[in-house]
Length: 315
Ligand SMILES: Nc1ncnc2c1ncn2[C@@H]1O[C@H](COP(=O)(O)OP(=O)(O)OP(=O)(O)O)[C@@H](O)[C@H]1O
Ligand SMILES: [Mg+2]
Image (cartoon, rainbow, N blue to C red; front, side, top):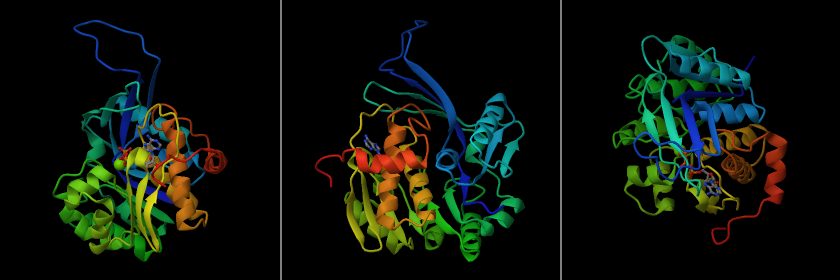
C-alpha cells in the first residue's frame, strides 16, 4: 500500500507532567495533576499526529532494545503508524525526554540522547522513499544522514513524485551546511523562529525565510509559537495568526503544525487553508498534555478553524 506520509528522523519518548513549577528538594514528594507518555520527536511526533488525522503514515527512525523502545513501538502501532522502517538498535537506549510543564504551559526539556538521534539509513528506506506521497524529513544532525546521504534520499523521493517537507530539532550551527545540501529538494521548510534566527543570524523572520528560499527551499513557513507563523510561500507573505486558546502544554506544537499542514495539503487544500489547518491542529494539541493533547481527528480540527478565536494583534 502506498504511504501518504513517511516521516524520517528523530524518534523519542516524551514523559510529560504538569503542573511543575519547581522540583521538591532532597527526597521530598508532591502530587501533580497529570503525567503522560507518548512517542515524540521531529519524525515520530509528526507521524503520530498525522496518523490521528487519518493519513497512512510510516516512520523511519530508531529505538533502543530496551523497555522504552518496546513501549514506543507499541504506541506507534496502536495509532496505526507503519513501523516496518523503525529500526531497533542493540545495546543503545531509546532517546527519552522529561518535560516538567509549568502552570503557563511552558516546557523546559531534559533529554537523554540514544538511538533516536542516530537512525540508520537503510536500503529499505532508500527503496521505499520514492513511492510515498509526502516525505517529512527530521533527520538533520543525524551522523548517518548528514554530509550527502540525506540529500540523496530527498532527491530520490522527489524524483518519485513525493512532496518533501522538513523540520529541525535543536540544530547545531553546522546544520547550515547541511541545509545547503538538502533545501534544493525541499518543497516546504518549516523551522521554528529560534532555529531560523540562529541559523541565518537574521532577527527579522521574513528576512530569515527569504534566506532559506535563497538556499533552495521552494516555500518556507517559520513557526513562532503563540505569535503564529511567518509565511514565504508562493504569493503568501506576512503572518499566519495563531488561534487563541487556553494553553495547557505546547509540547509537539511544532510537529503537529507540520503534520496538520501535510494532512490538509494531501487532501488537496490550498496553501493558506492548509496552513490554517496546521495552526488549528497545533491549537488542539496545546490544549492538553503531551503529543496529542486534545486532538481527536481531522473533522474536529476542521470545525475548530471556524470556531476558535484568533490571537489578537498578529493577524
Ligand atoms: N501559545 C500558543 N497559542 C496558540 N497556538 C500556539 C501556541 N504555541 C504554539 N502554537 C501553534 O503551534 C505552532 C508551532 O509552535 P512553535 O512555534 O512553538 O513550534 P516549534 O518551536 O517548532 O515547536 P517544537 O518544539 O514542538 O518543535 C505555532 O505556529 C502556532 O500555530
Ligand atoms: Mg520544532
